[in-house]
Length: 432
Ligand code: AMP
Ligand code: ZN
Image (cartoon, rainbow, N blue to C red):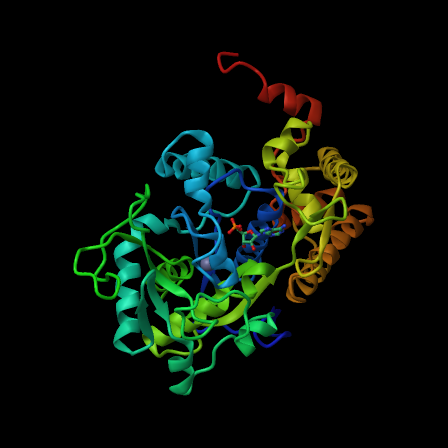
C-alpha cells in the first residue's frame, strides 16, 4: 500500500513500525462551536485510513484528542500572544462558563461522529484531563535545555534546538517558518519561530480554565496560574497512549504549517527518538460555493444544517468519498443532492438483489488496488458502480458490497429507507 507522506512530499510504501500494529493519531476539534462540514471532511479521512488498514489486516490503535482548553488563535500562526481564545469567547457569547461550552460542543461532536459512521477511536482524550502530562512533557524539554521563560510564558527555543544539530520546520509549508521571518513577533521571543509551551494568565483577569504549574514569570515569586500552549497537548496525549513513535498522524492541511512541525519539535526534543511520526497525512480543505469556508462568510455549514435541509448524514459521507483526500473539494447543495441520489440509488439496487452468497475476488482485487493507491476513494467508488452494472449474479454482488461496507461505511448493511421516510421517522415523537 502506498501513502502520501507530507514530510517527504511523495507517496511511499506503507510499512508500520511494529507490524501488524498501527498507531494512528488525529488532531480533533476545538470544542467552542458546532463542528463544520470542513472539519468533518478531515475526520472522515481519519476514519478511512483506519478502515482501510483494518480491511488490509492490520491491528489499528486509533486515538483522537478533543481540544477543550481555549488557546489564542494566534497560536495557530505560531504566536501565542496574539488573537482570541475561542472557548472563552464562546463562553461570553453564550453567557456560560468555558467548561459548559466545551462540554456542550463535545457532546454535539460525538453525536455527529456517530451519525457519519466514523470509527470510534480507542479513546477521545481531552486536553483538560491531561494537564499534568503536558506539564511533565514541558519539564522534559526544559531538562534538555530547549526552553526559556519570558513574562507571558515558557517558550520552545528553536535556535538552541537547531544548535544541538536538530532540524526544525521541515514539514511546514510556510517559508517563514524555515527562515524565521514571521510577522509581528513577540519582542521578548528570542526567535520569531519560538512558540509557547505554557502561558501565564494575564494579571488581573481570571480565566475559566487555568491551572497551577511549576513556572512563574521572571522575577515573580507568587504562584501564577496558567494554561498549556496549543501544540503541547497533542504531543503529550499521542505519546502517552501510542508510544514515543506513531505510525500515522492525520490532520487538515492547515496544521502542516505550524501545529504539526511544532509537535515534531516538542516530541523529538523531549524523547530524543526520531522520527516522532513515520507517515504524515494531511487532507485538503473543503470549500463552499467555490469560496473559503468561514463563520464570517456565513457558509460554515454544520451537520445540523445538512439534516435541516432534508439530507441524511451519510449523503455527506458519500460526497466526501467522491474526491481524493488531497484534492480540494467544493461543497454545493446541488452536489450534496447528487451524492444523496447516488447513495439511495445504490441502496435501491441492493434492495432487489438476492441474498448475499460469496464475494467476487476479481472485484475485490480492483477495490484493493484503488485503496492501496494512496486511498483513492473516487476510483473505489467507480469500482463500486462497475460492480453494480456487471453481469455477475446479484447474490455475489451483494456479498461483495457488504464486504466493502467495512471500508465504505455508507450504511449499505442497513435496510433501504427512502429519505422522506427517514426524515419522517426522525421527527416522530419518542412514544411512537
Ligand atoms: P479546528 O477545530 O479549527 O482545530 O479544526 C479541526 C480540524 O479540522 C483540523 O484538522 C483542521 O485542519 C480541519 N479543518 C478546518 N477547516 C477545514 C476545512 N475547511 N476543510 C477540511 N478540514 C478542515
Ligand atoms: Zn494536534
